[in-house]
Every structure is written in structure tokens, then in C-alpha cells.
Length: 247
Image (cartoon, rainbow, N blue to C red; front, side, top):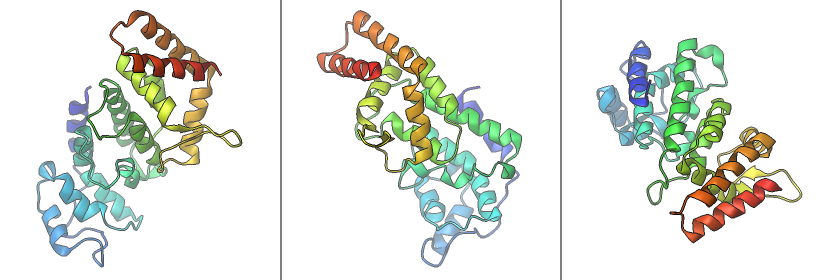
């Protein structure tokens, strides 16, 4: 199943989460009644990221069951927007934070399976083109995005380690050189401000794993030897990454 098919499936899976004439959002200072009405009365498949941000994502959270119910109602459209890298919130990293996946008892098995599959397919998609458009985030942003929302990062990291594309390797090179803070007196951590110790620990441990280092070292050696289209700057950065992997 590809991403488009999975998103279409999500519309069917979550269609039971019907909303009423009002939303469980903060209308004291976050969302206006007009914004709320526009969101409720706009067909879900046509809701824009701007409207979803203004009428839902800007609201202060209350962590209620009703809030999660409404999040599940909007979730298929959020997945669809995210698939187009059109995020309905001010920071990409928090677009799925409202899912509360750290409370698995609030999610049906099939729902969790769909979200897990989405995360893997989405990350795989991110690894297929390089670079992203000028001014857009690096691939580490999307890794943190899933980590912040309590998705299981292991399948994503495995996907990265097992890809043989030059694009995936160049993203890895950028990640190692730019997205990690190497501290001499304290544990390494990700530079992304939205990351947390749990995400840092899982990713850094993955990078420290001998099998991971060996896999990417082999990929770098192959590209340096066989790929004649790489420019001098890229070759130098791949060499620096290789040296870091040997430490």
C-alpha cells in the first residue's frame, strides 16, 4: 500500500469520529467563533492547513477524551496535508503531538497499525529525494516530528539504514554533520529544539551501534569510489562523515 492509498483508508477508518456543532477548543483567547464555524462547516477533504491551524491547532490543549476524538476526526486530512509537506501548525515537529500515542489504550489496534505504516512510508518518501526545496527542513525534522508524537522510531531508523539510495546517504551525511551536538563532557544530543532526551538517546544509540556504523561506512565507500558525479564539497562531507563513523 502506498501513501495515497493509506490516506484514503484513513478517511474510512476514522469516519466514525463525527464532530458536533462546536469544538472542544479554547474560545476565550485562541479560536474565534467564526473560525470554529468555518472549520466545522468545511468538508473535511477540502480543509486548508491555514484554517486547521487557526481554528484548531492554535487552541490551548485540554487533554480530554473529546479533544482526542476531534483530533481523530481531523486526522485523515492532517495526514493528507503532511504528505504534501503542508503542515497545519507553526512548527512541523508538533503536527502529530496531539495524538497522545503515549496512551495506547485510547487507540484501536487498526488505528495504531495505520499510523505506524504511515510513519514508515512517509519517512521512506523523505529519503527518496535530495535536497528538499530551498528553505525547507532537513530530514531530521521529520524524525523528530514522529519522535515528539511518541511514534516508534525503530522502524524509521531501520528504513534509513537499509536504504541504498544516494539521496538517503546524503541525508545521513547532513544529519551527522549538522543535526547532532557533539559534547565532550556530556551525552551527544540532537540540535533540534523540539527533541527530548528519549529521542536523543534512541537516535544517538542507533548511530553508535557498530552495525549501523558499518552499514553507512560501506555505503560511503561505495559512493566515493563509484559515483563520478559527486562534487568536491559533497565528497569532502562524505569523507568527514566516514571519519566520524570510525571513531
